[in-house]
Image (cartoon, rainbow, N blue to C red):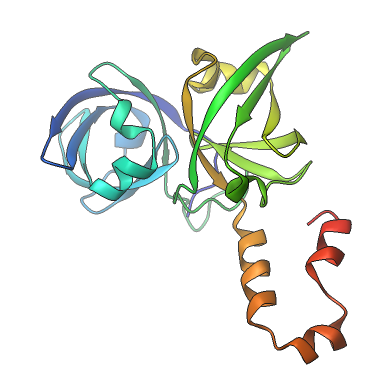
Length: 216
């Protein structure tokens, strides 16, 4: 499990492409401090397993499905990437619950400065937008952010200077893709409601309309 609080920006050292998979080596500093084989490290929001490492870099295997569902296939040697180690049991929960399992990619449509912040608008699919609510949480390339507005085609976040300086988000431009993971709470609620017998739903009074009207 992750929190969406980026620990450092690493750099892709090498990419070895296979027929439909890849081995990516990332150069980093902070995440190397207590690294072990089998550790989970999120790269641009994608949970990946450490398969080898040396003093200042580590490698991960990226399977075909991950390349297909994320923007990792567009990385190249020298690309900067957001990194976060799995949350320690005694760590602070600074962001929100992030699984590192990408729902889909989105496309940045605009980046507009607003005093000291930058509004970033992202277009994505209806399947993803159904789980995005105003003032709720969203993970963009591994970064935990608060949704400022949402409509039927896109959503927007306001990025503060600290987040911009500590991540790669403001290095992007309109047309670039980003990995999206929605708040998993909404998915579990929907699953439970779908599996609950109709008579129990009626007795509880909790419906999808009820949850939407109360900000879920």
